[in-house]
Length: 194
Image 1 (cartoon, rainbow, N blue to C red):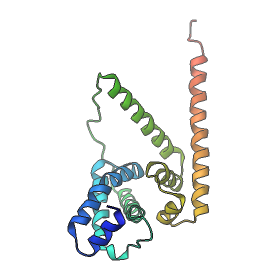
Image 2 (cartoon, rainbow, N blue to C red; image 1 turned 45 degrees about the vertical axis):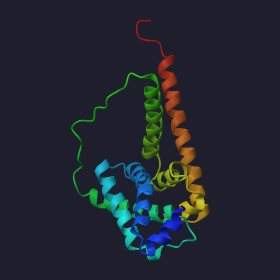
Image 3 (tube, rainbow, N blue to C red; image 1 turned 90 degrees about the horizontal axis):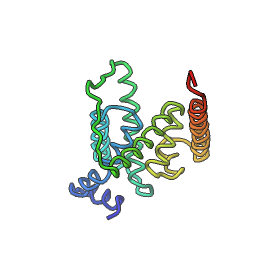
């Protein structure tokens, strides 16, 4: 069943329909919030839960001409921004144990390496892009929203979103090229005593 149909049923009072929406979108919300905020998982879970609760409370405000995910992401991003503003005033919590276990199986190790490369790319993006560029890139490539939908979520024009995406890609490509050339230069330099 399509999400917009589930929204219509939930608005009519069907709790199971909203439970299905929450089941479908909660993992995507957690993924968005974890990368968007760069926050620990408990914070992302809290914001995802609050986003779903607010969506349920305000189903009457949903415009079914648009995708439910666009509306839900808008709620989540606004809550994440509010959370990060208040978090700046609090000291950061650093987990004591950040060690990860590694598997010896080649396919699992290969998948872990691919995921680490993707994570490193998003981490690089977080470091070099503006907040708006990062948000636009995340919504486009991680959440697969169209520029029109991103414009709705970010309250920007479609052209403004395209500019953010273009400049964000260019900045990210330049940073990756810079890092690659720095790595290549280190490899070419002979060791001392050779």
